[in-house]
Image (tube, rainbow, N blue to C red; front, top):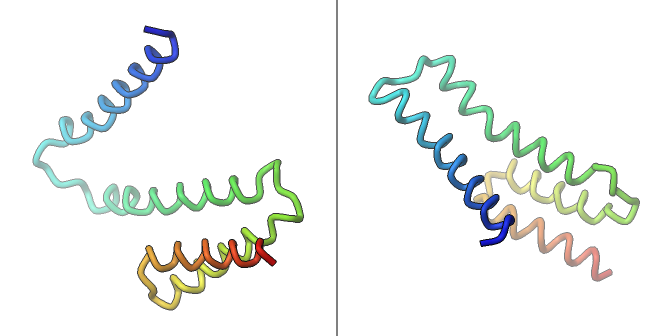
Amino acid sequence: MSTLWIAILLVALVSFAIKAAGPALVGGRRLPPRAAGVIALLAPALLAGLVLTDFAGPGWTKADWTVAAGLSVAGISYLLRAPMLVCVALAALATALLRLL
């Protein structure tokens, strides 16, 4: 087995251990409302940070305006209460059409 596969297995095991630690430590108890609120807001904040750093990171060029347009279409369609899958499809379609032009 190569070093790469050993590293992949170790990362998978550590990830599983971290994910299993939460339910094992909390058990059947409910989290305090403040902690539950922080956890609920953590995923959208992380996703927004990933999108922003991927979009406007060091490799950003002026040719990426099509991605900005796609993100704008996704945001507007989400504000109009479209389902998430529709938002993603519209964003991909808008980006593809603008790149085609």
